[in-house]
Length: 163
Picture (cartoon, rainbow, N blue to C red):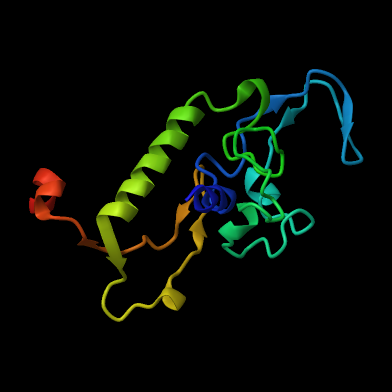
């Protein structure tokens, strides 16, 4: 489950495709470019996570890359590994990162445990449109439609199942 969450954050950063603006505190060089003092900088988190020099088959959803023995098993999403920084890094890392990670893990585990999932009638996984609509935040161009099928006894769902 952790590998699936990491891979999802890699392909679909939870914040914006570009980090919040930063100001260079001093003149420096990065990747052969001269960055002047006081320049406004944006980090393209979306492009970093799709860099083919870092990620084999970068557009492919492949959680196994984060499993033990995988090429990126050591990588975390907490800002220590710059090839995957969905919450930013350094002093200005997202203040809600810990809560966000816990909530995503809890909600995903709950949804996987409590329901089986099916696509709407006539739709197959190959037909899913995974394109993104670009703007201030990233979202799917076509919303995902999936049908939850309760797996547990109806009393386990409380009032939610009657909705």
